[in-house]
Amino acid sequence: QVQLVESGGGLVQAGGSLRLSCAASGRTFSNYAMGWFRQVPGKEREFVAAISWSGGRTIYADSTKGRFTISRDNAKNTVYLQMNGLKPEDTAVYYCAADYLGTGWGRAPREYDYWGQGTQVTVSS
Image (cartoon, rainbow, N blue to C red):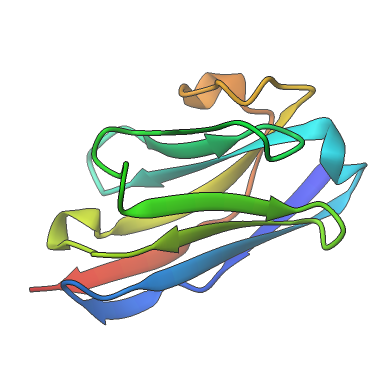
């Protein structure tokens, strides 16, 4: 089992930047592909980005491509989401997730085995 703790959320003006972090503990971090998702009340959890165990493969939702960057540091057991050019529609609770022995292609929440508690990101217009 792996435990995930997100941090770095907050309030930012449109056009601003935030960097989210997700610290993992428990089992070997490099055994997991990692993903970021977001959710607003009343809507389904939405895919944001994913990264393979080595960091060599990354994928993004169309809505975040070119603005967000996912990365990982396996020595620090941490995955990051750098968010630039934030828009009000990016407002959501952001979750990191771990996919045991995953490929890094996972876009569906059901493909992930473990989840963090989430961190709120609010973008004001």
